[in-house]
Every structure is written in C-alpha cells, then in structure tokens.
Amino acid sequence: MQNPLRASVVEAVSQALERLGVHNFDVDAVVEVPPKQELGDYAFPCFQLARVLRKAPAAIAAELAAQVREHPAIRSVEVVNAYVNFFLDPAFAAETVIGEILARGEEVGSSNAGAGKTVVIDYSSPNIAKPFHVGHLRSTIIGHSLGRIFESLGYRVVRLNHLGDWGTQFGKLIVAYRRWGDPEKIARFGKRDIARLMNDPRIIRNRAKIEAAISNARAYLDFKSRKDNFAEHLWSFVGGKPIQHKFRTTKQVPATTPESDALSKDLKKRGFKFVGSTIIYAHMQATGMVNDHLVSCFRYKECAALAVHN
Image (cartoon, rainbow, N blue to C red; front, side):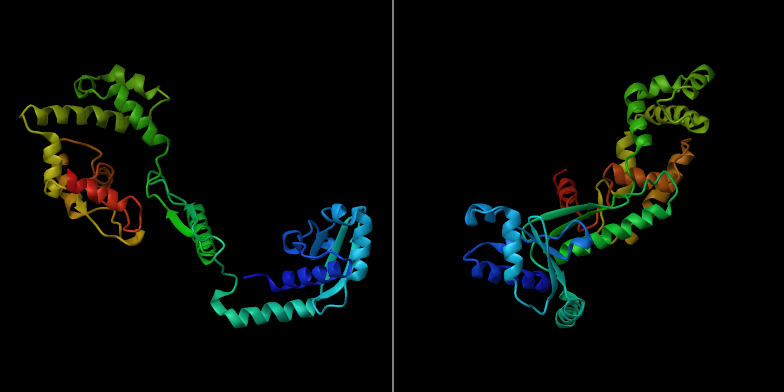
C-alpha cells in the first residue's frame, strides 16, 4: 500500500507539471527523501526534466515550485538548486498516520513487496561449549523481530538458530581425528606424548581431556578385542535406527534422554571418560542417531528420508 503522505506530494508535483505542459511524467519514481531533515520531508529533483523542457534543472525547479498550489498535506515548498523540497503539515501528517493505524489495525505497514522472495535470518546460534551470554538473547530477539517485519512485507522467512555453533574447538577436533585418529597409535601415548600435546597450539590443551583421549583409545581397543562391532553397539541403544523426534520449538529439544543416559552409563563401565549423558546426546545428534531438527527446518525431512533409505 502506498504511503498516503508521499502520494500527496506526488499528486501536487504531477498537477504542477501539468500546468507547465509536462504530461504523463512518472513523478512517483523520482520523488525521494532528502538526506537531511532540514531539507524537508520529500524532494523532487528536476534533472530528468532538463531534456523535456530544455532548461537548466535549477530554473525548472523554481518554475515548478511556483506552480505548486495549496495542498492540505504541504506546509511549505522550498527550492534548493535543482531540488524542490516539500515540508509536510504536522497536523495533517499526524491525522493521516493515526487514521491509517486505526483503519488497518495490526495490518498497518504490511504489504506484498516481498512476495515470491525468501529472506534467511541467522540467529545467535549459541556455542554449546561456552556459557550463554545476554548477547545471545539480544540477537535472537532482534532476529525474531526482523523475521516478523519481513513476513508482514510478504517475504518467506527462514529462521536459523543452530544449537551448537561449529566453532574453533570442533575444527580442532577434526584436525585431531585426521592427524591422530589411529586408536592403536593413541593408546601407546605416554608422558612424553602428553607433554608434547600440551604445547601444541592446534588442539585444546586440556590435560584431563588429552589423558581421557588416550584412555578412551585403550578402552575402544579392549572392546574390539572381543570382536564386537563398536558402531552396532552404539546404535543398539536406539534400536538400530534413528529416533525421529517432531519438535516444533527449541525448548522441546532435550539435553539428555533415557537412551543417552543408558549409553553414557555403559561406556563409563567400559572405562571411557568424558562421556556424560549430555556429551553422549550431542554425539547422538551429530551422528544421526536422533533427528532433532525442528519440523520447520528445511533439513528435517531430508534427515528423516535418509533414515528410511538406510
């Protein structure tokens, strides 16, 4: 819906141009908002009229301003070089805006300007390895507000708020898997290796976690020595196929489940460390043992389909 105040200025300029002999000129495409408030509420640059009237734009602006008749929306008109600046009448503007709000209610300001277009809004995406901060709340609120504004303008809005930002620590884990992913090699690590790793800036230098990685490699080899399939053992806790949740809000996504509690307890008994239920559930999410994408997420159906095909 067109701005009624802007429409009043367009009407006044169109009528003035008619009196100057200029017909069917697209005034609406030229009227603009000045860069400074002291230059008025709207402005009409006269450069495009130079070819039509064969005069200097500044001279055209002076003639055009003289042809502008009294209008209830316009308090005054001023010429600045090639621009005709319009100052709106405050009382008329207030009455028009308030009337528009009362008439349209919650629909005021909405339009179909974004019909057929998509806007993606990335929210705070909190890093689950670090404490929450007020900044996470702030950006989520701002993102949600922007989403509602775009929706009111007709856009299709896709909201993204990944729980568990893939930050530096995950990149370091990938590097570690590629460089030291051989469990037999890791199981042989001793004090010198631990000291070396504690000075390696490419990894998270936490002694307890380094020692746990070595211990876990040994526990894994002990498990395999009984010719058991470790992957099948893990998947047995979800019945051998992904659990398909149907969460609609992030508040519904749990930090742990009975399945992660049971798997965590089992691994601890086998000598694994840093395998609490929360960590295990994050592992289950990352490896597809559970589908915790919200049903509104564009990945939800894709992950569900993969579970069926596999």
